[in-house]
Length: 359
Image 1 (tube, helix red, strand yellow):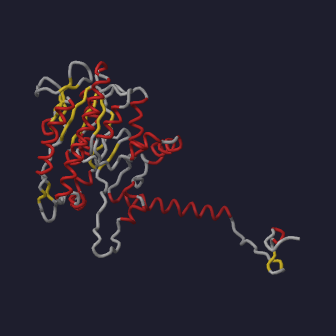
Image 2: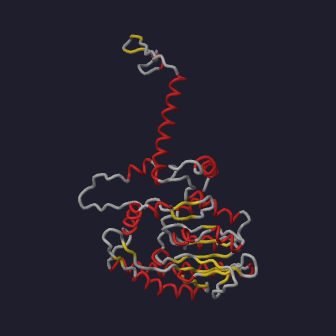
Image 3: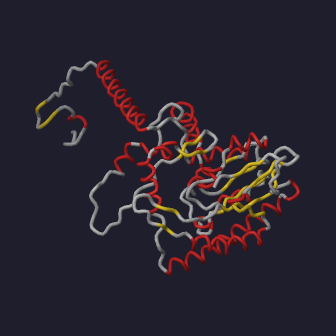
């Protein structure tokens, strides 16, 4: 005898049979209408951002960084490799380097991130036997702060499905769709609306799009930052959020962290030089100059002299202990040697091709 919950009671309610007829529907017409609405909405979103000044470009994603990092594992370990923060990412133009040196570097710099963890990763990789250019931005390098550390984690744990998805995105979406950028995703746009906040809760604006990237992570400034005064002011206002006076305890903690980062960097550089000195590995530390900035609107000057002094105190023991050549950013000149692709620092010479990293 079936229980009250038995499947034998299907179609019955309180002893009475019932039916729920499905509405008559033309499946093909419904599918066509849904596709038409989808294409219409997609086209409207694309046109909106095109009108804003956005053009298609490759995403500066963890997957793209991992793709470039894997080049060292697949036979390109003898190339020049760049690690650092946004200054080397934005300022080093790979086509110019290639034209003057005959070699296109592997760009592994990441914005908002200390290069120490990535330097350690290369030091542990026996496949890397090339030259390493390390960018030293004092406020990041000596803090150990790394917004993009997930890129390194992704490189180590990327699944075949993730790799395939990245390739499909590279071939089918990124070169053609302007809105296909994290800054223009619908959820991102919704998050940055002026939603009400609780009293006393600070409001922090997220960094907006300021650059364009190629498939090999060659990066340049987005022309909207250069040509749109309102967008310039917004970018400066957002950037100024990062420069506020620190309490004494935070300064003391930062100095301790600085020493720890120096020890890590020195150990990694020595490991690179010691393990592969016979194969020609060369490491150079490049420091971009720290200076004051001026915010548009209130013209409030933010003095970065303290960061500059910290950098001067730190970079000398870093260079002295590691043995790496130091290149001040304001006078960074790499000349092409007689051997193709061989870089070394020298005095300026009108008879030599030169690469000047812009300030």
